[in-house]
Each structure stands twice: as structure tokens, then as C-alpha cells.
Amino acid sequence: MPDYTTKQRKALTEFLSARTDEQLTAKEIADGVEKSGVSVSAVYRNLAKLISDGKLKRIIREGAREAYYQYTDTDCCRGCLHLICKKCGVTSHLEAKDTENFVSGIAKNRKFAVDITDTVLYGVCELCRKNAEGTDKK
Image 1: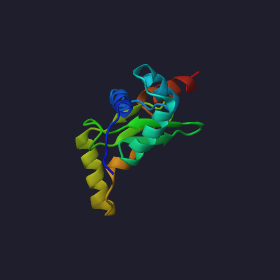
Image 2: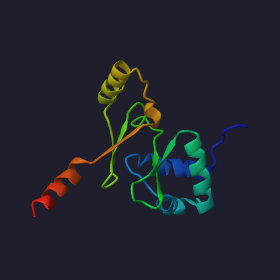
Image 3: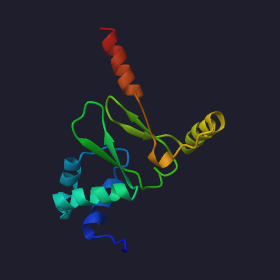
């Protein structure tokens, strides 16, 4: 079956590719592309297709009821690991050099090949740690 891109999928991928550092719910995505004429059903249909194509990650945050989606089919995402804060959900890219050092260290020390296309490291970002420290002092 040939792979083709519809106008709706193009509008959706343009919207998502401009937000690679964000995790969005399906509703947030649907709201964001509504003005482009993308229907809610097309959003869900295309989210499933983008996930199966490896261009979109589906993320379940701790304590969250809904799934979040992050577009990863861009140059800034390819070849790097993603760091996601478990408190605020902010996503950042581990620089390519740091990713390579991490992956090669695992390969050397553990004899394990990390698939960086499907790997996310969870932790707590600097801002959330600082906010928690400020709360602890009160």
C-alpha cells in the first residue's frame, strides 16, 4: 500500500514538528489544528499512523489519566535521547555528544545496545528541583 500524505496529515505534522519539545494531549493537538480544517477523527487516525511509523511517541505520565504525544521525526530529535521531567513534563534533548557517550558507555560496560529512537530518560528538571528545595525550607 503506498504511503501518501493527506492535507490533514500535512497540517498535523507541521503543527507537531513546530512543538518537538512539548508533550501534548490529543485534545490539545485537535484544538491546535482545528483552524487548519483537521477533524478530531483525523487527528486520532493520524496519531495512530504516526506512532506506527515511529514519528510520534505516546507517553503516559505518572498520575495522569490521558496520554501525551511528542513528535520525534525532526533533525533535533533524531540521534538523541529525550529527558522528561516527571514533575512538570518539560522535555529536552540530550545533546548528540552526551547521547553518544551514554550509549557507548552502556554498550561497553553492559554489552547492551540502546535503541535511542525509543528511549526516554525520566527524572526531575533543575527548575522543579529548585522549587522543591524552596518548599522544603519553609
